[in-house]
Length: 590
Image (cartoon, one colour):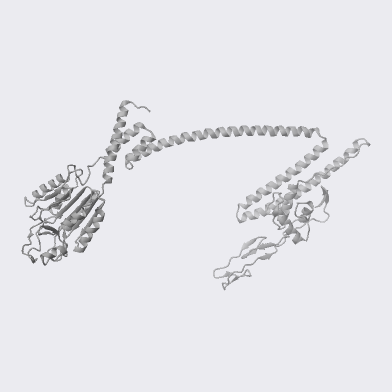
């Protein structure tokens, strides 16, 4: 894809700006910066210092706001606690890029060695300083593994509180004012004193000492080199103390700029420019590139919205393609269905032509058989639909199922009676025909229509269900459930019908029963009621016994099955003077 020269230049500028932003962000994110801040105010054997604790708290908050990864802040440490804090900090500083140690409190120099004093220091003798204090050399040593910058800030150049009380064990041992000059042997290390060697620092009249106040104002300025920052600290302290206190720096740094806080970048302006360039390109790839750099903020949300619009447009196009394919498939399906209907219609027409070519008697007989089969099928299908509908209802639906079954059986019986009447009328009609024909022709014999095996199975299944022998289905398929139901009927009614097939003999025998034949069996905890099993419930404090009664004593239930014979269901029995007829070789009576 080719772009105009002006647009290509903008695109190149976008790439360069993104690379610069990434480089600064990655460099800043890669640096690990850690700090240890100690403030000792509550000295136990000399006068307390008012400011070191507040000085340490202010410096710790400053470093945290500047984005340091670890800021360990400790106050009023005894000698063991102070040594442990320095030892633990050495583990955190081992892989750090920048490490800072700030100490505010009493310090002293003995024989040219600088010591930081814990709050429990007694220092009765000059030799006790090695046991009861922490040397500056120890702190410098634990920072040797730091990669880029080691910075120690000591606001500890106050008057030695033990100068007059501490005994000298060696007459030649010197104890000077403030701290001694430091010779730093490790490169990229800076040590900042609140006052230069041999002089003392003021604790200050405000909340913080003059030295700490100047550090708060200048040290964490973004992008400011440490040497310039401490030069500003020096100037501010000299001014605030009337040139009585001059901070001093010891150590060595390279020629590159060394800052505690990297230069600030207006990320919002960068994001806005990047957003404008990405919008000019307007592709999903451009928005992906933008969001890979700018993950949060207003412009990131706007970029996600633009990306969503492109994605929605692609989805709409895909949906349109899918709709077109579905329409084509539906048209093809309709064409196939139309062709199938034409074939079926042609087959029906061919069959109708064949039927019209047969004799009138056969057409009437076939038509009668077809009507009987269709009527029976419609009635049984309606009964099945009513049963299925009843199953989806609650207790009231169960009553409707029983009513539907009763209606289905009654309608089936009426249709059988109708078939009988039609057969009888047909026989009479055929009997009249010979009177108008020559006497030499033989009289035709009426052949009764045969009953479809599936319809016979449905009728037998419906009557078996009526007398309590459930065949599990009434679809006319004579399966294992139907065979088992007829076997139960034989066992309880004393009959011996063949259970393998649905026969008219079996239908006659089952229809003759007006009430339940197969007994109703209820499970444990149930009782028969209205020809169905319901759960027995007991009042609070009572339990169901093995005999089905509720008792006070909580006896464990015993598994049992109680058979209950329901009251005989009333049905219309054949009345005196009933009429009988023969259908398909079997005799039926009303």
